[in-house]
Amino acid sequence: MGAPSIAIVGGGLVGASLALALQAGVRQRGWQVELIEPVAPGSDYQPSYDARSTALSQGTRRIYQRLGVWSAIALRAEPILDIHVSDRGRFGATRLSAADEGVPALGYVVENAWIGRCLWDALDAGTVRRHCPARVASIAVAEQGYRLTLEDDSVLEPSLTVLVDGGRSGLREQLGIPVRERPYGQTALIANVTPGRPHHGLAFERFTDDGPMALLPLAENRCALVWTRPEDDAARLAALDEAAFLAELQDTFGYRLGGFRQVGARHLYPLSLVEADEQVRSGLVVLGNAAHSLHPIAGQGYNLSLRDADVLAEELLAGERPPGELATLRRYLERQRFDQRLTVGFSDQVTRLFGDSGPGSILLRNLGLVGLDLLPPAKRWFARQAMGLGSR
Ligand SMILES: Cc1cc2nc3c(=O)[nH]c(=O)nc-3n(C[C@H](O)[C@H](O)[C@H](O)COP(=O)(O)OP(=O)(O)OC[C@H]3O[C@@H](n4cnc5c(N)ncnc54)[C@H](O)[C@@H]3O)c2cc1C
Image 1 (tube, protein in one colour):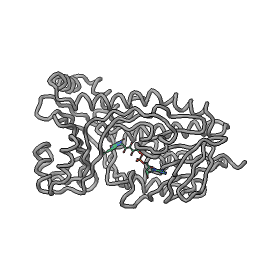
Image 2 (cartoon, helix red, strand yellow):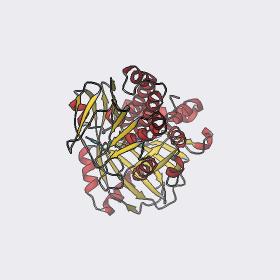
Image 3 (tube, helix red, strand yellow):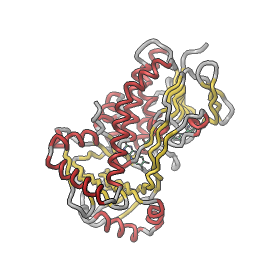
Image 4 (tube, helix red, strand yellow):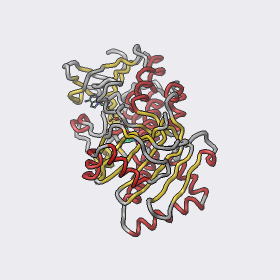
């Protein structure tokens, strides 16, 4: 039998981060990491490192600092200095500020393509064997762990398989792992826009009757727009010409950032809360979006998955046990269970409360926003959740 190996199926944001978190410890132990990804970072159609941007929390920054990759990511990371949360056309509003929280920034907005490039550049080819472009076509139970058959018919039988192949994980389905899916009936329209005025690090979370909208500060005085609308309406907005789109955006958002000047490519993401019923089996972990996909408005999904990946790497490298052992994997899940429940619950409740246009919900959320402004401890709790630091 060869040295133990860990196969990471999917080299997106979460898979590549796990490879990086494992790299140093695995090298010491003489284990091998296999990273399998169909689309190289930098390709136009890379589904994880696409035109989107991600709001990285302070917790994420700390993990990346420890992994030695933050200085590269930071070159194109725009700090969020304040967040203005409001309900469009109603009285409730609150403002979260980095200065009040005693932190240099509430978070950092980075383009996914840049994060992907930094992560892949930091991988050591000797320890992390990249299979790219390569796709796992099928997964089946083997004598020990799982057998992975790649599209070129080559076969891997790792001690541990980590499925990080995204929210619509076909391999999770092949294993018969059920998911609980609750569609939000909304689609996120993503685009970068250029405002007329400098954003000064100010992020906006604005709740409208048709769905929430976030405008996050990006490098080069651009803003990353996440605009959630009912499906048909999102498709209509995506098809508008630039002037008509900017006019509707202006009408919904207002003039706090001046007149919008330009919009980049628009992309649509239908939204649902998806949670896998099983995350660990002997020789198997389901991670990232394959384990839980959240609504993007609270900016929590990736930050949570990175904490999962970090704790998984820590548990795998903690003892001398082989990587696929069920007790180790259960320990990982036990440690992350509370964080997962809290984060999934927080973003789901916020989304549902702010996405509901019934009079009771409108009153409740406006009172909530006013209450946050009047009650510093509540506001601090909210800010900590938003920064991805709540469960620590
Ligand atoms: C619009 C939007 C905005 C978001 N904004 C934020 C934010 O601001 N903050 C935040 O924390 N989170 C955010 N998220 C969530 C975040 O994008 C996800 O948490 C993250 O993309 C999950 O990464 P992943 O690697 O698990 O999955 P994915 O990004 O889906 O990557 C899966 C990878 O697996 C590969 N793959 C697929 N099938 C196979 C196969 N058979 N074999 C091998 N490889 C395969 C794919 O090519 C891909 O590279 C947002 C999500 C959306 C939709």
